[in-house]
Image 1: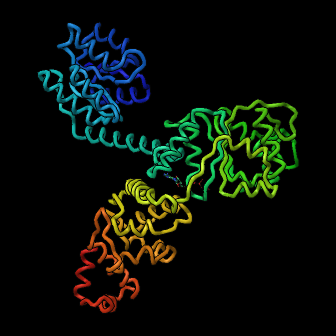
Image 2 (image 1 turned 90 degrees about the horizontal axis):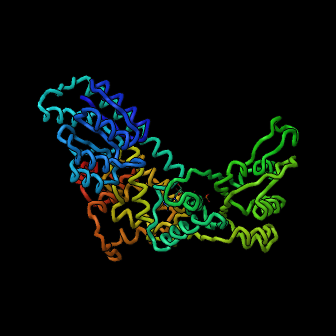
Image 3 (image 1 turned 30 degrees about the horizontal axis):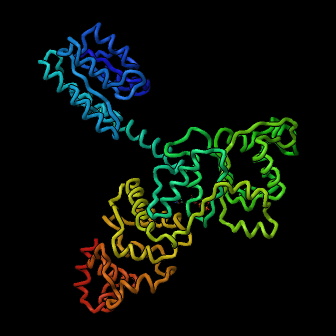
Length: 481
Ligand SMILES: Nc1ncnc2c1ncn2[C@@H]1O[C@H](COP(=O)(O)OP(=O)(O)OP(=O)(O)O)[C@@H](O)[C@H]1O
């Protein structure tokens, strides 16, 4: 079949063209709607395949022009749309498109559409596809899809962009504030919070805004670098600056961050002599490499984070007040997770879904009884600890929802204020059924599992402890499995 393929993205266009040619079609490629229209007018194309979003004439405009032309009857149009463009797809069908395909294109699906179309057109163009070809196309599509997924995941992970969740009002305000700071690069921002509260994640949000920025985000942990090396790490050095240095010299983090953001984590631990130099960089927007005489202009945004009490360091003289006030133009204080209990379960659910998807498990949510345990725990490691906990649960178990038994291995029971968390579950007189409901089955499962744990798996002893027969306990265990 003669196919006109229109897509401004060369890689995907070439890939689709290759697959169509392999399937025995004749393909003319165009990278814009205007050129495609010229080809369409000059030749016979039973099928036009076009992306919707293109610079210049869009796929929809092309479709409307084709539908309005006298050659309309000879041609069917299939459009490619993204997942979030369902209205466009509907509009395309209304405007007369034969069908639409979601991107990334599934070649197997595309070939099926072409086959259906050829059949409809009266058999002249109809050539049944061989089973081996369909399989091959299926494998190729799946491979491409997985590769794309991996790239997307890596990108999103490195930016922490799409995996963030802000549920409590205080965190929603912080997310809004981060978006505000994003809009003005001239504002340095100081982020304070305990370890694992999400300081780097917020710094990345300030840098990126709502889409992934192409500008660099360079992070330095001020505690992790020795004071001797700090200066050359930050400013770079000229050749022969000191014994053992590289002959060619080395650029520093300030060079790497040019045009983007320099994130200084644990700023409270920055050596004092460097604090003066950093202040100069911020004020004068230029610096010298170690051993260098040339002034280098720089355009960086500075975001700092600290989990130490910086004000105390100010008072003790360990941190310069002039630098502190220069860095603290924008300020965000991230509360510990225990002070925003409303975030715990939604965040746990978010992580649970992410890890389940990654590891091919079934977990969808945290059950009511497990949620009580999670909210009763102190979370000294904050969101990082919660995230790790959910990763562990998904790694260890596979179920539809998280039950108290799944959390036993995390040591939550012994670390948290066990009385608060468990007394409500265990003492029937204190127990208040939560608004969202409570699973009696989970409760019993949890008790049975605990009893077994206490008796190292000895079913008879566990049954005795619970005042039930061994047989009843075994039945329960069968159900849990
Ligand atoms: N609101 C959130 N939504 C989703 N994930 C979060 C959120 N806050 C933190 N995290 C995750 O928790 C982990 C710790 O976050 P991050 O590294 O930003 O904390 P931090 O405060 O910079 O920690 P540290 O002080 O130890 O460097 C990361 O995996 C991050 O993605």
